[in-house]
Image (cartoon, rainbow, N blue to C red):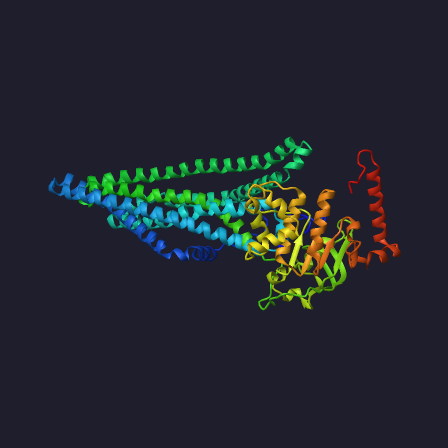
Length: 626
């Protein structure tokens, strides 16, 4: 589909239809299912292409942990054999072993950390691509009810938070568990009684972690949702900065933004305070176990027949510190996982979103169509709201121009949405060349449809690339020809770098009329059989309007055209004028016949004429603003 504009509002739900909501954490809301199986499947899908790195990281983790666990046994031998028995000759070899295993542990740990960081970047790339690809499959209904800033937060901030879980979380969990299991096994191998004394505080430690996780997880959900609200507010206010400046609303808007910003700050501060208060207190439990171990071990070592040596007590102390260090890491990782799981929840919410309009598995691939459009007894509503179209029937023959007029909110844009299959009707059907659109592949349909809308959207790309967006494979000659027919070639050549001049938000600022001509060139290059115009001249000056009208006349030639008309004087030559009121067609005929009939259309024309005459009569506005 060739879009002249992708601005919001014109082709969304009608006025009064609520489609923006401020997403906040609701503990009673239905949760997205985040099962271990689903998480593992997600990880596998993202990291499968990097299986060699995964295996290397796992091997490095095992080797590094094993080397670390062996070091206290070397220290035990130094105390027992060298210091206890006076075997000084063994000291050199033991020191060599100590250095060898210490260096090996450092090398393997560094290699593991580097590999996991690279895997994390791969995971972020894969998930962000998955999110963006899925967004491109969703219908307009999703984007109309979801704030764009919140979507950006999910794809950017939330995916970044999940990276922490992959790079640090998974790595720390696996290595810590292996270290804990290895340490416990060695402790019981050395002396099971001392092991029980050393590990006595463990049940209290684990219970504390579990209770803390249950308490803090909802706070993390609130924090991530509040960050999404901040991004949404920022995006909306930047988009509307001209209106804010025009009405001198800077201070109220600053206060409005500060509301979410302050909530996010307070929630973040709360989680930081809780974590930094809880974890040090929890780690004090390790001191209790250490004191009990030293007391019991010293008494055992003092008895010659106990089988406990001073080296064994030193090794136990070293292993106990190694035991609680990974447990401390697990507690910190749990804090991070709670934050990351809130982000995973928001990402899965996005990925679980079903496209509003889905193609059938055997959908028909449309080739070049003739352009006959039939709307048969169509009724339609947005989501679960009231019907905005009620039993509507319209037929447009190939090459005909059909103007759609009516009051604001009458259902004009909704009808266009159905023709482009942005939505499917609740009742009735829409046909192109006799084929029900629900049986048609959406992309093949939209390759036959062009749109030129009021609010022209230009990408931050060159003039050439903006025109080529309709048909990227087109030649340079075709681009220039489309620009000439749209009366855009001359002003493009007048730009600093001609067709290579960057337009859009970060590029050269064009007038409204120039943007419209770029949009028309884009549509001409697509060469659609069905054309949808949201009256493209209502926001430009008289001189630009004449040029654009000439370009539109060329664009409309031999195409089935639907025009959403705001100024009725521009559609008098249409083959058919369809008048919609409160979702129903109340009149449909040519201009002269509708005027003779004296219905709603004539009333609207006369009212617009009166307004136009009143404006022209005002001092200083002669010549007509309308």
